[in-house]
Amino acid sequence: MPIVKTEAFVLKSFRYGDTSKIVTLFTKDFGKINAIVKGARTYKSRLCGVLESMNYISIIIYLKENRDLQLVTNAEYKKSFSNILNDFDKLQASFRIIEMLNKSVIENDINKSIFELLIKTYEMLNQAEKNIYKCVLYFQMELVKILGVGPDFSELDNEFETFFKNNEFYLTKSQLGELKELKNNSIDKLLETSIEHNMLISLVEGYEKYLLLHTQGIKFYKSKKIFLELKQTI
Image (cartoon, rainbow, N blue to C red; front, side, top):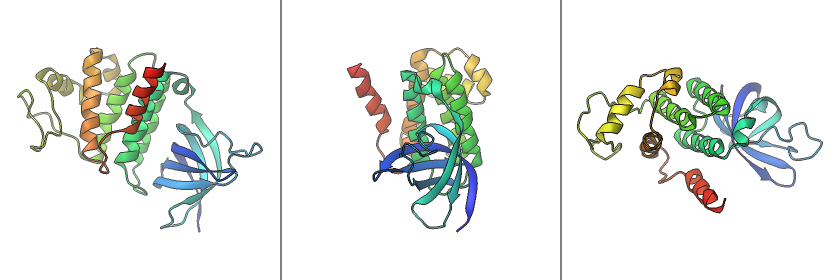
């Protein structure tokens, strides 16, 4: 049973038993894994608070092939994105990114490009004073490109034209024009580009629907529904 060290991003974390946690981690060197962290919730534990969702950490794992739950023996912060945790809109955007990623990658599929994209997006989202959903759109456009399922808009000129004849993407002419302009931009240029808010949201939602058709049989993202309900109570 090899002992390995890697970087990881905590996608999900929940209590297990009296003192332990089970976490879903997207690791740099081993892809997405589920792991148990024994004693992580005791007040004396050095791991208390480290293994919460959205933390960027360094971990040591007892790694065994074909085991459903790996064993994390140690972890420490690399970065906590505190500005996201303290902002409702950023938090909503963050959970949408996490859920899109979690439903788009399979366990143990190593993809360092997606890992680097995830960390870069969270660093941008953490620092952003505006343009929050530009960070989400950038993540979506890059994710479908890395996964190899990105739609090709270059040959489309007709309003409401769809992809692969099954309505994978449904665009107005103005949305199509905007995406053609944006899809080859660097992130710096994307953040500087002026996009009307409703247009930006429609593009983000368009990519969400597109990703739903390429993920694990789900019909909607739960985080979106939860945050809509939370907004109604605030």
